Length: 102
Image 1 (tube, rainbow, N blue to C red):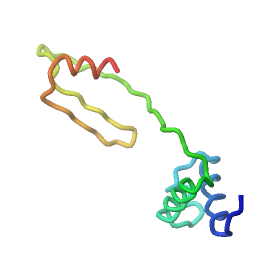
Image 2 (image 1 turned 180 degrees about the vertical axis):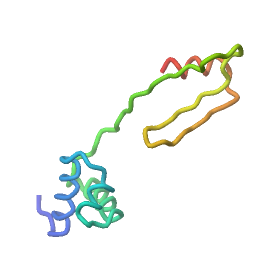
Image 3 (image 1 turned 90 degrees about the horizontal axis):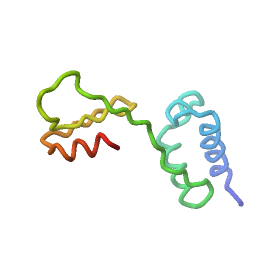
Image 4 (image 1 turned 45 degrees about the horizontal axis):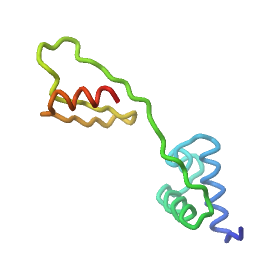
């Protein structure tokens, strides 16, 4: 595969970030690189087949039950590892049970 010097530069950095198990943000900061450029080059190189496509990542899910509740559950709260929370209210009991079973 023939790469330009710019393509090789960014490919090396993208692969190094993966090898070191660092986020692009952490890696870019450590190496004084432009984060947006790193993301852009990562996508460009993948699109051109110069980097392997990554499989989607899965995250562990923990189901937490409310401490005490006499009523049937009507909502679900999802808390992501980055702290973002998604709350779905007004759900029927069967849907809540189905979501909890996942």
